[in-house]
Length: 277
Ligand SMILES: Cc1cc2nc3c(=O)[nH]c(=O)nc-3n(C[C@H](O)[C@H](O)[C@H](O)COP(=O)(O)OP(=O)(O)OC[C@H]3O[C@@H](n4cnc5c(N)ncnc54)[C@H](O)[C@@H]3O)c2cc1C
Image 1 (spheres, rainbow, N blue to C red):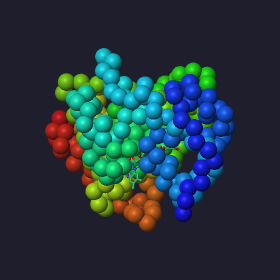
Image 2 (cartoon, rainbow, N blue to C red; image 1 turned 30 degrees about the vertical axis):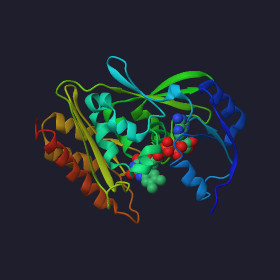
Image 3 (cartoon, rainbow, N blue to C red; image 1 turned 180 degrees about the vertical axis):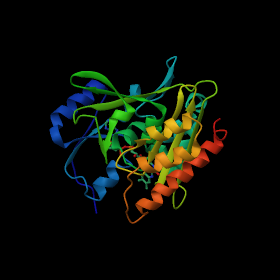
Image 4 (cartoon, rainbow, N blue to C red; image 1 turned 135 degrees about the horizontal axis):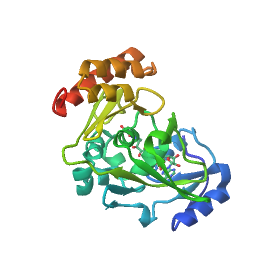
């Protein structure tokens, strides 16, 4: 089947992209890496879209050290995230995540902003953003605003972003000196979407755990985090499994996903230095 776009325009900068989006109204769609959008168009899940191509907006690309955090432009590609030295040093969870995302061709085109805006419940970057306590930057006709990642992902393919807004960047706090950041996931084959995955961040302020592919959006597992802070791994696993309400589908049952989440938490804690570390 062929895609059916209603039109195409290339934006020169963010204000121009916002103008084009306003002109397109409800049919407006930002085109970034195209790895999810074009696939949806080809399957006619999306039809008559007015594509606003932002790929030439240089200001949306690249990684900057802003002192306490890293500012990662929306158009920074998965492959660039995976090799960037600032990210490797200060937010290694993102570096590790890239190894789990799809295949080289997709990683060479897909963008971090596209992955966050698309909000696939099985995607790695949204869960990383929640686990790291990242901030999403958006720009719209009313100006710029910032949204905490844990408030950004609202459901399956649904975010706090308004129809006329563009996700411009993500800010990620830099890891403290003794911080560990770990991703564990189970997928049928390398590069497939995870059946269930988990991010663990252990920092001076406490543990953060985010689970993906176990609900409509990444789950910040607060009760499991509190149990880990108390050094109780068995309690953390039980709390985590109680906090999740995963779906059953053709890939895995809810019970399997809940079980795997517990296994992944134990593996992540082990890798981060063990119980009570
Ligand atoms: C075969 C295959 C396997 C994949 N496997 C994985 C996987 O294992 N893990 C994973 O995480 N992902 C996976 N993906 C998805 C891939 O990571 C996509 O690249 C990503 O989800 C979307 O990024 P993109 O830049 O291609 O966005 P696009 O496809 O261009 O856009 C996706 C959606 O986000 C919107 N959008 C894009 N950028 C912005 C922005 N800056 N502001 C506002 N809205 C925006 C678009 O309008 C569209 O609705 C896979 C994709 C394919 C085709």
